[in-house]
Image 1: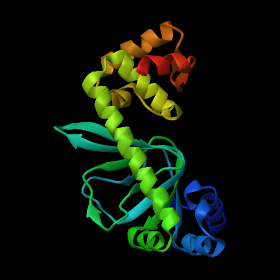
Image 2: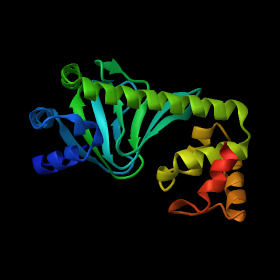
Image 3: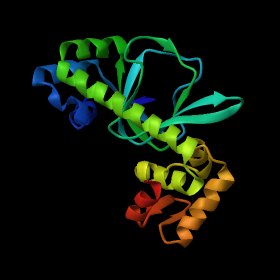
Image 4: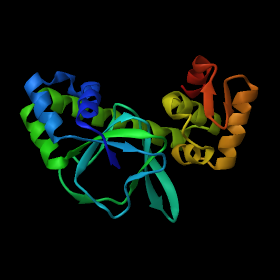
Length: 218
């Protein structure tokens, strides 16, 4: 990861909504602890069995969190701008990878430093807990989709939920995230295109009829 200068660091931090609740002094203290890094596409933040003791806030770009299950990659989540990942409570050996899907900018804190920030600011603590809760809801929704919905409903729900990331995910990655085969995903996307719901090319998927996709996924 390539570090960014101090001016860029302050600008990026100021534009992360998580930190709007901080006073000027609290923000200055936070900024001194932070590092900003630029990630090229396909770069790894960490790999399997790496020891990590950092929290990462994504300012720009998208990252995927993936694990190996029975010899195949399973994408656990896609992290978008304004979200975070990593270890808040301490150091751990991870069994997953974090990889940039496109050029990304991340703000990095040592876990112990960020834990001290949370201890001293209850409002920021609540914001972080809310975000963690929202991600748990997202995981539950994906499990319900996989367990009970057919392919068209599953892919429609995925497009609605991950519309911002569709320019960076391959059909195979969408298959991993929806619990479908790549062939089924491609057939479903082709059917959606024929129905005028989406268009797609090498640059990604573009939504044409979001309301119809929402209705299909409900």
